[in-house]
Length: 222
Ligand SMILES: N[C@@H](CCC(=O)N[C@@H](CS)C(=O)NCC(=O)O)C(=O)O
Image (cartoon, helix red, strand yellow):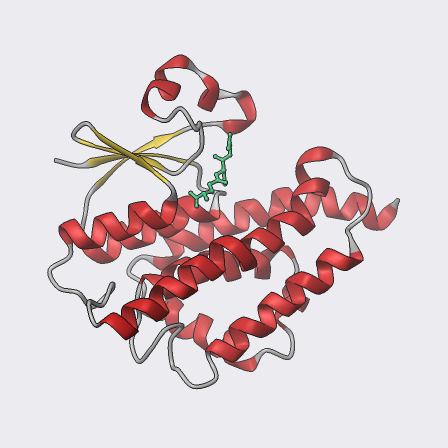
């Protein structure tokens, strides 16, 4: 039975769930939810997820939100082996560290820099936050220093999650990734390994990029 996914293509956390489902071979019943028109605040969605955010899944009555929790669930329940989410304690710890890094540092700083302008009408990007995002990107370049992939020698859910964020950063302003050769090479490698990458991630990242850049271009000409 397919799993319902409440989502928007433009949302990086939603895209990380779509990539993972594709890698695991789980069929999703895609249920678009338009945040801009407030569909996430309707009683029928609040009944499923009182926290009213996406991605949210409904797996035959098992409701779950938080992209990293959903991704781990999909792999733990449906993957044929532990490749994407290794059981080896040290490898798994590094995977977890990268997931928390994405949530608490990289994606968070990206949002802190751009969301005030894109969503709340701020008229300037914060220089302090820009430096913080830059530092986070440097951390990722460092993680890739001794590994081919984000957490070890093969692709895991850590790569999938970080790819959704980094590809979003790239479409908003590719200069953030300049002078980060390891990130750029890793991104290309992941794009070629993730099944249906274009459809599951790049298409939505570009939608986000167009939306973001329509606000950012007004800043430049202001
Ligand atoms: N930590 C969450 C973040 C999810 C998130 O920020 N979702 C946004 C869209 S990208 C959302 O649903 N915002 C509407 C709301 O929170 O009411 C995750 O990774 O799933």
